Length: 255
Image 1: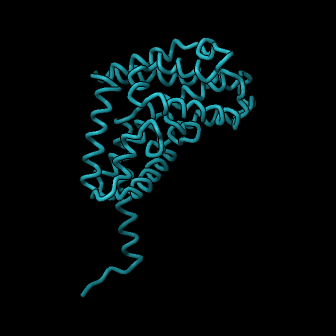
Image 2: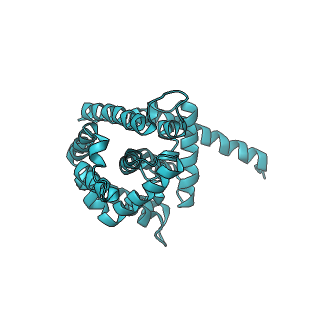
Image 3: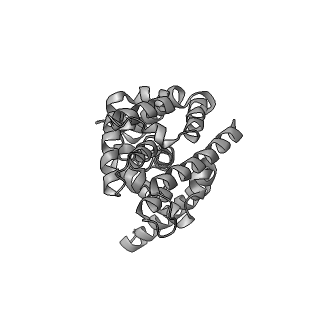
């Protein structure tokens, strides 16, 4: 009887992984073109491999469910599975006694509900929220000197009411509290620094500052002025606005 030696099996596995990577590169360039353009192909392949590894933790091994998991990463951030803003997803991912197909199906239906309520038909709620981000002046977003946290929370609610209400005020309080710690970690202790960290975490995912899908966030936070003398909070806000403006164009071209 012919048997496959271990090294042959590994070569076979690597061949199929590479083929899947190649397929995902082509798919993601169409599925999330703005996101994909913001990272080089090499970094994009690293994100795909990260997605494969993370999906495996939730027993996603087949092509379809793994592809779906990676799509969710590009929609909600690489760490969406631990993001309190995506508790609808983590509840399914961590549910016991579900096989791969059942878990994937439930996740799809929860996503569908989220998209209808939060993103809106033809993503109009999301587009409107992104347009409001383009109008934000951080000094107004963080206007309350008495209680900066409440001011930022109110700003997030007025920016994207549908998401705020779906996620819930306790989660947003948690997100903003964590933004104070993240801002301090990057030596952004001024109100604008905290505000822009909270805003980007709200719009891009709770760990956007370490997300390989958004390398420009960490790039700005880690740059202490060597390449651009402007304050980092101002640079981050303006770069985020440019990114969101391109997203609006991309989404409207699909409608």
